[in-house]
Image 1 (cartoon, one colour):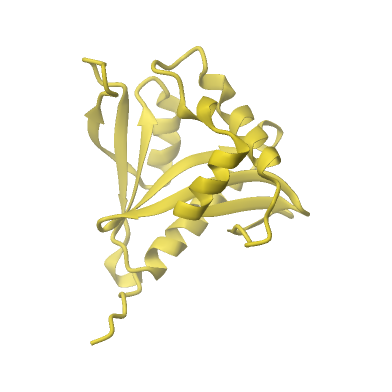
Image 2 (cartoon, rainbow, N blue to C red; image 1 turned 90 degrees about the horizontal axis):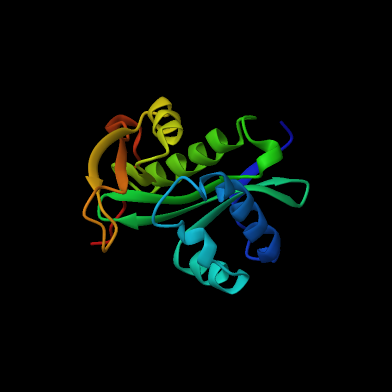
Length: 169
């Protein structure tokens, strides 16, 4: 694999290409989930804002975006969202490498867990995240729904491998 995975450089500017990767990767779930994915509300401008509020990791083949994932601290966890791999590059290890970069980032900031949400209906996602060490810790409903619509999954980071936060006295 000649794909590089790293935090998005400050010079990154292909927001339209990134949106296409996200929309393409999430397209398979359109007729399977309710409510619809928030990916449908994304625009290049909203992705720029999201990347300013969260850490964006990219998988690049040369300078072409083939995958991404966002991460943001929430308490003692690093919350992971919008993991996407371009449809023609799925099942090649890119998603695993993106998650590895997120995990390394979490360890480097001293966080104890990775956490994510995935839709109830997407059992193949549950299995994929389980294979990466995530366990289901809860079921929840989107606003206006009386039945569970998504699950929360968590991966504990090994304490011996975490880097402690350095605080100034």
